Structures are given as structure tokens and as C-alpha cells.
Image 1 (cartoon, rainbow, N blue to C red):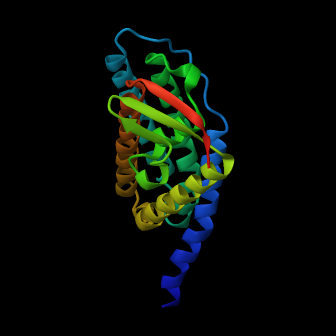
Image 2 (image 1 turned 135 degrees about the vertical axis):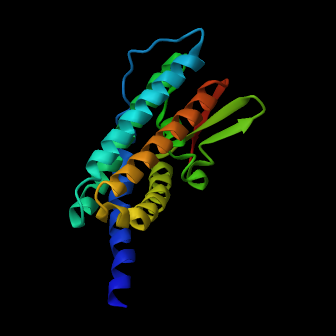
Length: 203
């Protein structure tokens, strides 16, 4: 019974670290060398495929160390993937001519809508063909990051056992990173492909 109690405690400690890591990523939206394209969809798909493949390699490589060493790579893995995905989102925004208005709210929405929709649902609202982006206070962003941190940590704890399985576990982790990055790209293309309306800051 004692062993079972360790996982929730560890997850609780990790979720705070994950939330802070998310805020750190949001605090540094990447610059992009991409420019608006007359045909953004095929170029964005190429970017998405390349980023997803790179994400799979990163996560798969970090998941190779077996046992407890595998657990220690989880947070660095998440941070590396989020940075990669953030660059991809910035590049996709540029292809659609939306670099100038790319914000923390949009970045958070793109990175986590597929994995933690409830936490980001108030940041971007679709109204017809438009997407309304609601500027959030720092407190609101922190709250969203905390909720996402819990979700992400729960999944990480639930799949941590795979990191105890050499090679096979790394393949599974890499496959999820590929899927996760592809979903981020899909959200970004859907968002930036719409007319955006930026609303004032809200709590």
C-alpha cells in the first residue's frame, strides 16, 4: 500500500514544475524567419511533418535510459518538445501572416488545446469563421498553466512505466511525441487560417 501512495505525491510535486516550465516557454515566444505565403497550407504541412519527426527523435532518445534514469528525463523531454512546437507555431503563424499578433494566449491554446481543452477554452473562442482571442492576465495564464500541468503530469506518471522498458518504451514515447506535435500543428493551422479578433485583457 505504501508504494501506491508514492505516485500521487510525486505527481503533485511534478505538476508544479511542469506548470512553471509552461510559463517559461510562454515567456519566450520564438522569432521566425518565415514570411506570409499565398499558399500556406502545403508549406505548413511540411513544417509540421518535419517538426513531428524531430519531436519523435528527441523524445525517443531521451526515453532510452531505463529505470529511474528514464523518469528523470521526463521534464527535460517535455520542455524540449514544447520549445520545438513553439517554434513550429510561430513559423505557421508567419505563413498565415499572423506573426504580428501572435501572443501568449494563442501559443498556449495551440500547444495544449488537444490535450487540455478545458484549461484553454476561454483563451480562444470561435464565432462563425472568426476566432476571438481573449487577452489574459498573468494570474489567468498561471491558472491555466497549473491546470495543464496537472493533466500533463497525470499522463506522464501513467506512462512512466514505459520508460522502464528498453527500446520498446522509447519507440512508444517517440510515437506519442510525433502525434502530439501533429495535433499542435493542426490547431495552429486552424486558428491562423481564420480572421482573428483580439479582445482586451480579462481575468
